[in-house]
Image 1: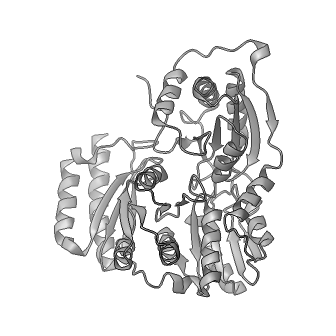
Image 2: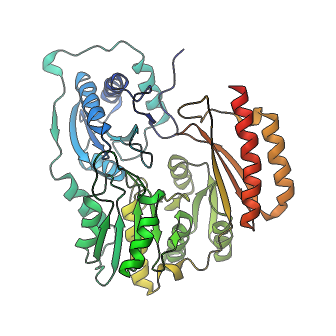
Image 3: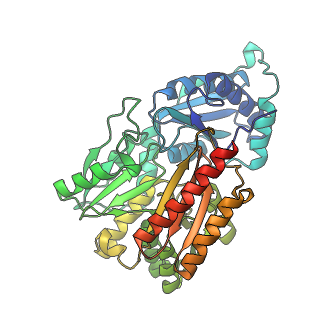
Length: 455
């Protein structure tokens, strides 16, 4: 039986487990090359970038070989943020951009995701065609028709200039003191340069990658070190990126975290006041406080499924420029084709300067409803569980109904199988933190037992 290659956002998993193996990635490169050559824009070249995890060397070589075997030329970027690959794919007029990254996951995971020649997600039809070709015999072209590979000239410099251009007319950040946590990841070179070249005083942490320390107790998923450094240095704000720099979490001058929902609120309010922003897109996991704050301001708020692909689709459908997720994926569609942590951070610090308000004050109008999210791991499952149908488990459905009846209008319950990990995310939102923790734990135990006992 043929296994699915693509999950909710490309391919991701433990290095050495199919399909995150050298053989599978080589074949993937060949299959993608064949499909892109047939359906592409005729350039015959693909851009490849990666984050800093050690396995990136291995998979970069495998992809390069597979694409070359299919007759595609390759432009190598080296370690670069995911949104940089999206941007540079367009700038190079390439058929596609390929990112080797597992985002916020530990070093022992890796993944592959694709952008089309316009810097957007690959169409579902193209993904299905790549999967079909993947299972066909790999046929090597004649030597004269093989693809070539070379380094992309000044990739970092081009992306830095692009980021700076998103707050045109280019304003000075002089007077701002920032701490930037690069998560020992793909932005370790470019992020500090963007902010310092615009005049900010920048202290950098998490910028010494060794291939194994990406996301390790740092970055957007572990902000404790950033909080401490902001307080130690008296910085105006802290900026936390994840391993591939498409997520952003910030820390205010008092050391308090500001998540993606709050950042989206600050950006939406500023845009609404200045250019009449109509609405924004969140997800099923977005805090109820964001929805209520938008309603009070007269800003429409729609919820998409979790995942930047779904947020992006809804933004395009509604014709709105701004959307994002609690985790810090923020899409400014009038500036970028995908979530970009650096670009989003630039907009936030620009709002601080324009308004004269601190980040704490910018988000003070939004009340956060306490949430508890539990990632329920399973003994006998590996990889994505995106296809798991939780409605088929009677005990899980009964547990959720019971909690929803207890909460009434005071909160909500969300269960979501992960698209990248072998877990189900259980979210309970209510007015009291103790209540959310108790009820989330109650549902999580039922989920764990039900699924473990059935596999």
